[in-house]
Image (cartoon, rainbow, N blue to C red; front, side, top):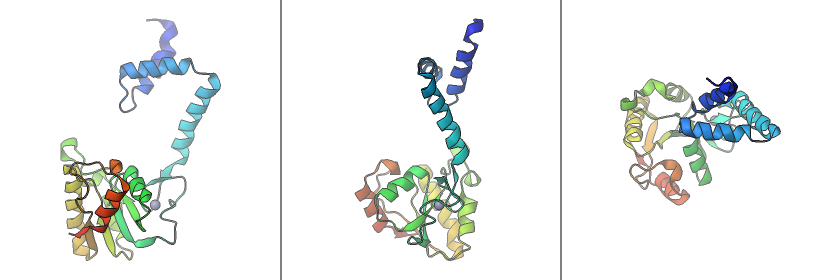
Length: 198
Ligand code: ZN
């Protein structure tokens, strides 16, 4: 073992923990980092620590935010009685870009996927049901139209229906198997307008 390579090996090992980064990419990144100016490396490291320390989940909708409540939840002009359920924060951003939706959100952070061992208790479902104890007019399910998204939508609708709250599903203007975040704003707006009651 080369005693001088301990630090680089450690750096490669840490980098390869990241998703999509194999050992080879981690090696490339590690050599890039050790050749970067020292202040640039410090900035990168500090930015990661700051993000990890300061970003938290909105206590109402569970999107990522710097504050207790995210900008959408704390906006009094938004209709707090309409909740759109999305799989992740990127989907929420996609709907925000349409500038059409005036309600609030609930971010599940995933979808039910039995083959990956992801069950209802692994996503933010209990928190969603808890929110229904306040005055809610409608829950719009905007999970992806993948098998996992549809399974999740069906599960949620079965869970909510007995409470008497109106449950709708965004229309199938969204291509089957399509990832919400890649779909253009017009298609998203149409899918929202043409939502159907479950
Ligand atoms: Zn929020």
